[in-house]
Image 1 (cartoon, rainbow, N blue to C red):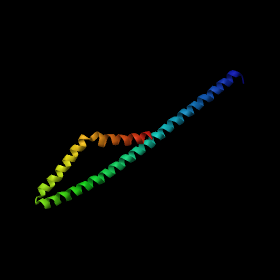
Image 2: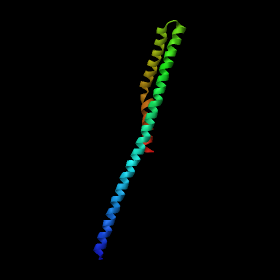
Image 3: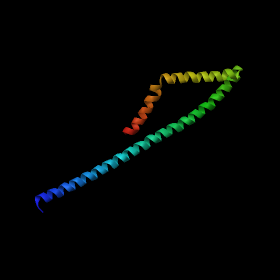
Image 4: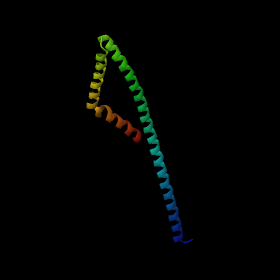
Length: 116
């Protein structure tokens, strides 16, 4: 085997190693992305489940508060209006502070899941 044949054989081996490396890198990044996607999806599903339970609890507590205040004040209309007004004020505060209370924490959770 002469020098040029050895050089061609070495170049061919190097190309095969480069192809294998590229395939392994692609597979690694696919697995990495799948893991991060699964982690983020699990966090979002957990958030939705907890939010649903809290929302149902708030509905039931609101009904109870409306009936209680209505009994105390002698008018169920006033009791439910007071509960509704309270929720309106809470919604207004959340809307005004939405970046600090909602957007930034959600972005932090998603970015942490993707960057860790």
